[in-house]
Amino acid sequence: MNAQPITHRDRVWRVIATPGIAWLVALFVVPFYAVACVAFGRIDPIFRSAAPEWNPLAWDATTAVGVLGDISNGPLRGVLLRTVVFVVVAVLISFIIGYPVAYYLARHAGRRRTLLLALVVLPFWVSYLMRMLAWVNLLQPDGFGSRALRLIGLDRVWLDGSATTVVLGLVYGYVPFLILPLYATLERIDWRLVDAARDLGASSRQAFWRVTLPLSKPGIAAGALLLALPMLGDYYTNDLLSRSPNTEMLGNQIDFFLNAGTQPQRGATLVLVLALMLAVGASWYVRSVVRQVAEATR
Image 1 (tube, rainbow, N blue to C red):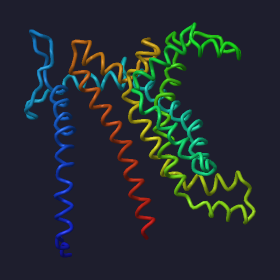
Image 2 (image 1 turned 135 degrees about the vertical axis):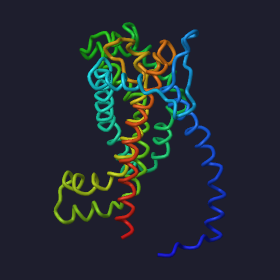
Image 3 (image 1 turned 60 degrees about the vertical axis):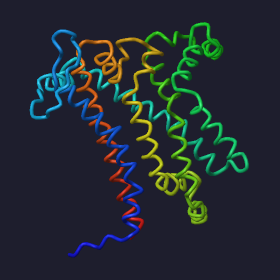
Image 4 (image 1 turned 90 degrees about the vertical axis):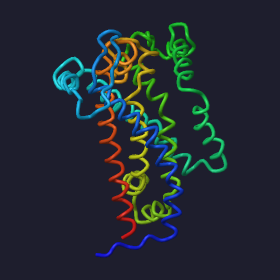
C-alpha cells in the first residue's frame, strides 16, 4: 500500500507542534532520564550524595533489584499497598461527592451554572499547601471544625496519625479535579435520550443507570485518572495531616530517600516504579478513548 503524500497542511501542523514536542523533551524526557541515571548510578563515597551514571551501558541495577524485592516482599510492600488503598478509597469518596455536583451543574443548575462553576474552580486559585494548612487549623482539637463535629457526636482527635484524616484530606484537596471533567461529559449528553427512556416506561433510577451513567463513562474515566495520578505521588497531605509512619505513602518514601536520607538511588528507583504505575493507568485511559472514538466514527 502506497503511503499518502504529505500535504501542505500536514507540514504546517508539524511546524506548529515542534515547540510543544521540544518542550516535552526538555522538561519530561531529559529529567526522566536523569532520574534513571540516579537510580542505576552510584553513591559518592565522600559526600554520600547521588553520582548519576549517564552511560546506560554502565548502569548498575543492584539497588533497583533490592527496592523491587522490598516492594514484593519487604518493608515497602505495606507502603505500596497502603498507598493504593488510600487512593482507591479517596477516589470512591470523591465520586460519591463529585458526581451529584457535576450532574446538578449539567442538568439542573440553570442560570446559576456560571456562578456554581466559578465556586468549583475557586479552590484552584489557592495553593494546595495553603488549603491543607487551613484544613489543619480546622481539625485541631480547638479548631472550628473539631468543635462543630463535637456538636453532632463526632468527638475525636483528627490529627493523631489517623488514616481516615489522610484519606479525607486527599478528597478535600483533589475533588475539584473530578467535578470538572464529569461536568464537561454530562453537559454534552443529549438529554432527549433520557426523556425517551422515560417515555418508554423506564423509571428515573432505570434511566440513570441505563442511559446517563453509561454515557458519562468517558468523564468517569478521565476524572478517576486525574485524581489517581496526583494522589499516588502525594506526600504533602500525609506530612501535614498525620506525620505518622502508619500512614506513610509512596510519595513520603520518595521524599525521604531523595531529600532527607542518604540513599537517593532508592528514591529514584521508587520514582521509576511510580512512573510505571502511572503509565499503566494513562495507557488504559488512552486506549479506552481511542476505542470510543473508533466506535463513534464507524
